[in-house]
Amino acid sequence: MKALITSAASDVGRLLVKGLGDAIDLVATDLPEVADSVGATSCPLDADEATRDLVTGVDAIVHVAGVSQASADAFGRADNAAVDYHSRCTYNLLTAAAEAGVDHVVYLSSLLLFADCDASWDVTEVWQPRPTTEIETMRHAIGEFTCREFARERKIKVTCLRIGTPGNKEAPFSGDRLFNDDLVTAVRNALDRPPSAWAIYHVQSDVEGRRFNISKAVEVGLFEGGRS
Amino acid sequence: MKILVLGANSRLGPYVVQSNQERHTLRLADVTEVASDHHETCTVDLGSPDDVLAAAEGMDAIVNCTVERRDPRRAFDVNTRGCFNMMRAAVDQGVKRVINTGPHFAVAGPSYETFDTAMNPDMPPHPGVGLYAHSKGAGQEICRIFSTQHEIQVLMLLFYNFRDHDDTEPGRNHPFAVSWRDAGDAVRLALEVDAACLDSRCEVFNIHAVPHGTFRKDKALRVLGFEPQDDLRLAWGK
Image (tube, rainbow over all chains, first blue to last red):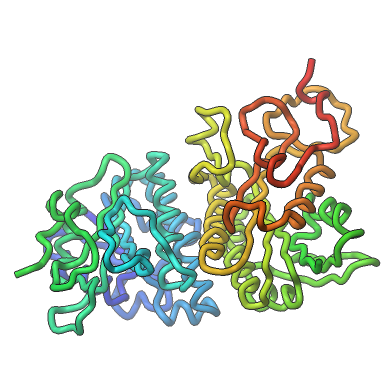
């Protein structure tokens, strides 16, 4: 399998490039301000030939969808940069991918969409997201909105992984902690299991005090939940 | 009421002005220079947060008539990110009501329109992946999210086909048509409707004047009191 991974210079991007690189033929990309720092292909994800070239010959895309500080600075404002990336850039990427015959996109969303829910609720994938207007949360709502329409119209298959807060096992406690190795495992397995059109999974590690229900992801074999 | 009209130079903008100027104080804004002897004017690029923030200062309400249909960058700059900047400015300036306008397919995209009738404005939005519909649908979703978090009333008015009120050309039997001046009146009704009459802080309305039943219009009558004055029978009758 040949897969494109976006935002390769981000922390999550670097983690996935390192973790997936042995098993998958990866093409890494990021926005021009930071792509060179990790040897990734520079692409602003405009509606043009460069984006079409980027997805040509690719079987799947891991859309990490993070905007670096340098790219946000170049845009002018971080909130506007995030809105632009999760709407326009994501739209351009998926449009080009659909036209090029790419089969599957794994979009990394966030469990922050449910941060406002009461901790006593058993929040699963069938709950309606409750995004706030904090851009770190809202950007994922916009990204999901964009991806969902491409999946709904059967332009491309989309797996939406709403992930917890990534970190290693020494990281401070977080109720939505997602250990780095669980994240890599879940993305790798998601790439192997494209849905018929659209699928959502909540992905966090099975830590003590785990905040979110992960049984759907565990049942389909995305990962084991991470409790060792 | 002090009202900021974004997109005052759009096709709809002048009809919004015409319907509201005797009852409200208007500030007319557009990305191009606005000519008016009667109203305050300013130049605003919706892609600029600072422009929008300054334009919204001291306003009670914002009417967004802006639109970009074709350019792949500007469509998102105006229709999507523009809504974000408008809502951010509304929060920061204490604006309590926003009237956002857009095409019917910001809600009823191809996956509805190809198959259904009796489509009501409260359906889950399925704009699809067309540039115009999708970018407007994303903008409306941003407005909705803001309304869940802040004390701002968002009323989304959906339009499709406009006709001049004195257009006598028969035919063009369109299932979602309204005259320009009735559209302007619908915006006025949305500005003036009592918040107590609204079920939530984000309400969507189909605004048209035809009897096809493809798109339901009863909510606009029931909630806004919208009764089109211009008879479009020439367009849909024999």
